[in-house]
Length: 179
Image (cartoon, rainbow, N blue to C red):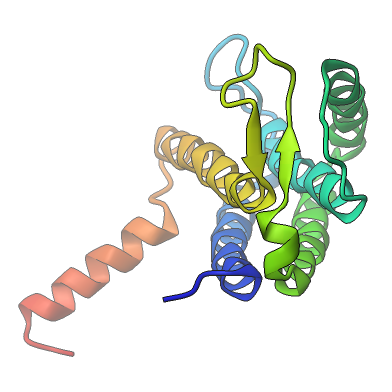
């Protein structure tokens, strides 16, 4: 079985669709909710998810072969500014859609040559090299990690996450012998 850019794009689109559904279900007046001190608010977390795929597209489109601390630090600072620019629920949901489409389109066009290229990191980073495939797959893992955090926050707010509701409906149908 082969897993390449097209499959990665398909999988990422599913992940982003679920993130958007979560973002839409949380009321706008809860986007400033901070579940604990020193933890991002709901809006900040969703803005972080949105912006995080931007640098991936830039790094791999430019075919950067080395990411040093200066490059990474500059990108973190730029991302922080981009995150802060997303203030309202409507802006965040729109950006989730737009950036998700941009990232998935980039993934879809990624051929095996691109995905197999290695990117090097400073010696203290382990491993010191990663393939572009691993880095791009990591963007999906990053989003799923933060979405899981937000699903717990939904529970704190009294919202049953849509994936939990879907699973419960599936189990109920199976228990009744329905397909």
